Amino acid sequence: MIGVHVAQLLKAPVGATRSDEFSEDEPELRTELGLRGPIVGSVKVTRTTHGILADVQYRAEVTQECGRCLGEAENVVENRFRQEFLPTTNIQTGLPESIPADPDEPRIGEDHIIDLSETIRQDIVLEQPLRPLCRPDCAGLCEVCGTDLNRTTCGHVVHDGEDEQPLGRLGELLKSKLPPT
Image (cartoon, rainbow, N blue to C red; front, side):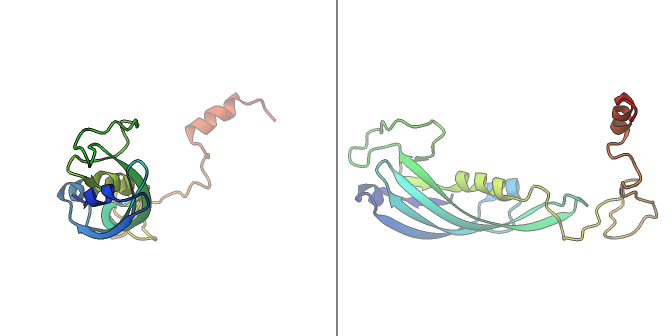
């Protein structure tokens, strides 16, 4: 768990801050996101009127499937985000807090620890490339036989689409529906 204990900060006046560094190896996230090592970063927590504002900066190395050849594509995901966490328990009385908020709003645990793991997981998912490449000049797979063209050539002629209909069969159908010019 990437966690920050904020009990003392909840007792501090609004505007009080504290910074922490983290380097956490999350086994669950490692398998789900393809992490190649620990998530490394820093968090600055600030006391707000209602809770704690976490300013998080992190770096994670991930392995994804290449969008062209289906091999391994290694990427570094770096980002910075801010998220406010609201308390579930009053630090002074120990009673449940009654701060009206969206049920999906992140909360500070009853043990006064902010768990950043889920927020960072969601951010890594959003920041990963949509079509990762194992290398910028990846040749991909042969359209005919599926051979990895980065490793060998198969001899099949691959059309680059210049002499074909732009929309294939759909383009032919649309063209037949248009009035002659």
